[in-house]
Image 1 (tube, rainbow, N blue to C red):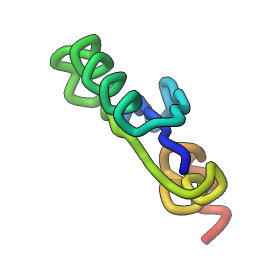
Image 2 (image 1 turned 90 degrees about the vertical axis):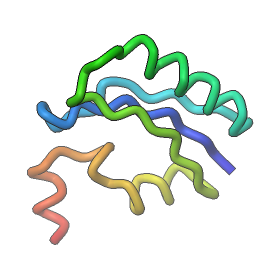
Image 3 (image 1 turned 30 degrees about the vertical axis):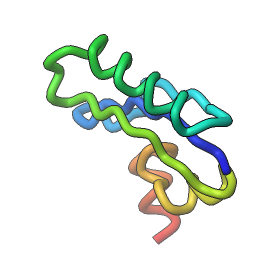
Length: 75
């Protein structure tokens, strides 16, 4: 399993950062730190995504990893 911490700017529609963790508990601890660092920024989304592989995450949560143009091209 792969656990990826994603910090995403909804207003800009772009990935701010991502970090991979071997253990979910480490990813969740990093998420809580990142949320505190972001403060009250309502346009910033901080999530931990878990899947069997990174490729699976890119398929199931494409909006975090692809631009709007890329997403509409695949439709």
